[in-house]
Length: 95
Image 1 (tube, one colour):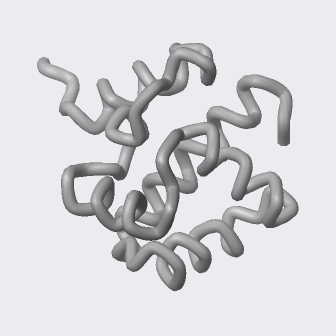
Image 2 (cartoon, rainbow, N blue to C red):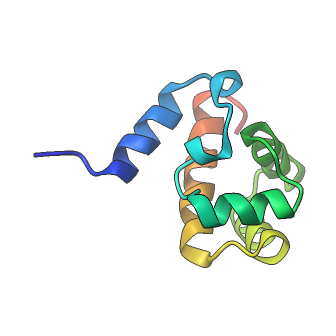
């Protein structure tokens, strides 16, 4: 049985040190369209997204709302992105 690409992307993202995650495209939920939307909103790195989660008091709901309202990210992609960011920050002890 082959693991689907979203599951692989998530596993890779979670196992890679944050300093080595160099592209927004490495974050689950970020595809070409979402990447462009994030860039247009001034988000250039995965670390900026993690920082925004911290600014929003580590609130997954607030982060999802911020992605939707400030970056025009669709609800489903926002959910996947936030889940990955929360899991990553828990893994590195930021949550």
